[in-house]
Amino acid sequence: MAMLLAGSPTVAREPYESVLTGFSQQASGDGYVAEMRFAGTPRSKLILLARPNRVVIDLYDAVTAMKDLRLEKNEFVAGLRQGLISKDRFRLVFELKRPALPDLAMATDDGKTTLTLRLNTADAKAFADAAARPQGLEEGATAAAKEAEPERIYTVVIDPGHGGVDTGAIGKHGTLEKDVNLRFGLALRDALAGDPRVHVLMTREDDTFISLTERSEIARRAKANLFVSMHSDSIRYADLRGATVYTLSEKASDSLSREVADSENSADRFVDPRWREDKPEVFDILVELMRRETENLSEHFAAGLVQELGRHDIRLIRNPKRSAGFKVLTAPDVPSVLLEVGYLSNVDDEQLLLDESWRNDSAKAIAAAIERFLGTQAPRDKKEIAGGG
Image (cartoon, rainbow, N blue to C red; front, side, top):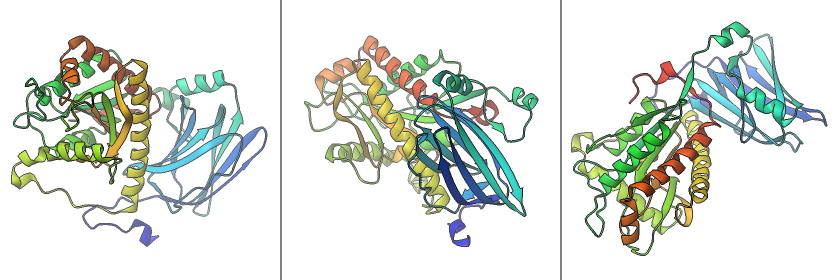
């Protein structure tokens, strides 16, 4: 166990109350049962998420000693994921093949705990109704306590790229990327304004320079559910046009992605040398678990965004979902994408990027993708995000 929790001395250790040490499952025609065995006693919350249907168990002050949870073939659960989603919360996600209602029971004996999840066959309406009700109730809490839970909202950080001394790309007719990005960011903010669930933070609302590291830190401080960086770069392929959605990857998916990432990452050349030093890299298994879950969520949102842009007839480049080492996307605990809404190196895209009507239509498409994605995520308490950013 000491090896599991070993990490960089620069990171303060949190006391973990329990450790997942065992996992087993069995399924029949009527239901599915998973047993999770712990050293210690975890606090747990059960959450239902729809579209796609999932059963989520959040475990507080808990960590896993199991690298992989093998899922046996069954009629109820299509996939099983685990990951640390905050410094004190570990999550298990059961992806359902068909609607099923969960029951979670806990038994403790001599410092060891068994948490038993039972999935019982249900129809689609019953699952949808259950998922729509207030959730996140701690195991053993009363209905009165559930009703007293604070109203919850989602936090989305919109990041208009470049700004201030960093103009970004310059179009054939003199259009500055920093101006295009800001207009798109504000249009997206306005498109999300009608959704009472969403709290929007902007990394900038005017012509201000902000370092790449600070942009992602704004999202981390706000405990954001999503970070969207808006860009309209210039590349050497003048005939290439359309939107592209990028996620973070150590290795670029192709030469274009590498070129765009190199261009965007160069923004920090404007940072005062005293502020250029990054925080030390932390190669800790807990951070890696969190990062892995975040990357999965980022990929999920990117795929949905590409689909939504296509549905709204927004032009996309070939293979529009790509990845590269974008520094602005490196927050380990915030799902993040970089969206090139178009390329200023293409004269037709440059003209389109300046069209207010097209900009507003595009913002609505992006907002629709965000709202769809947020419907699959656990929201945060208002008190958690107060003063963020």
